[in-house]
Image (cartoon, rainbow, N blue to C red; front, side, top):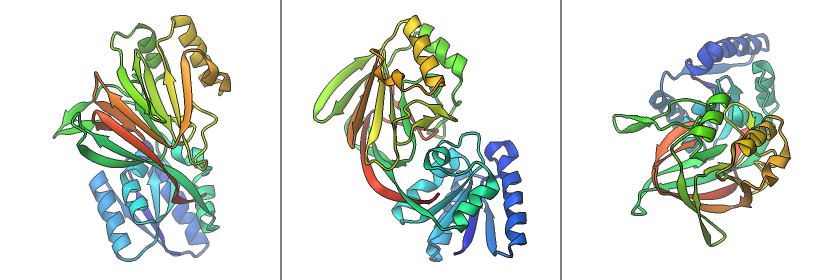
Length: 302
């Protein structure tokens, strides 16, 4: 097996570079050949991956966080590449959900054992208000719409949405309790179209979002379903209770009267009064979102 590492040197505020040095020392001690390719931005990462695939490499390893995974995932699933991950970002939700060690040496040992796990991913078709496809994105972990604090309204640079921040417990809590902006959307599940106002929706493939927040402990990346969690307009008291339950990994959160939970393999979301969403820590713009589970369509070392 060729060990080709794509390193994001900006990931984890230097953590990725440190992890890569540990791995290099470890592989050198084992007399194992490897190559390291440094990608300073998303475009470079995609070009490196494409060049390796064009040279008939069937495995790729990224050293970075969830953002690095989001960048490479379209090529990974399109070309049916076996994917190795060294978690080294600020957010490593995907690796955690799959069962990849957060220790760099242990993570590379998982790859060396060549244990391949087939997991689901979600095909996300993002459309404009006229139902014309804007882009198609593979989702490995989560999609959020209307969760302020996890996703803030982005600014746009050269026509591209720029992600603002990740999860802030206190800030999210305050905005949910006292925020003035409310979210309005429709959801179609099993042919039934329902309207929601003053609500938030999160779709999960794995149980975690935003650096370890276990919003849905029941979610399983290999069950052929995505978990849909809708939090409706709640009182301050209920909001505090829900946050306590999430922080304690308490499954009772899903049975709260202000929460709806579904397990489905297809879903449509129609955004009414906003046009942005967070998919695996990357901001995307659109109005209509069609999601479909691709069962065991992603192969990873785990």
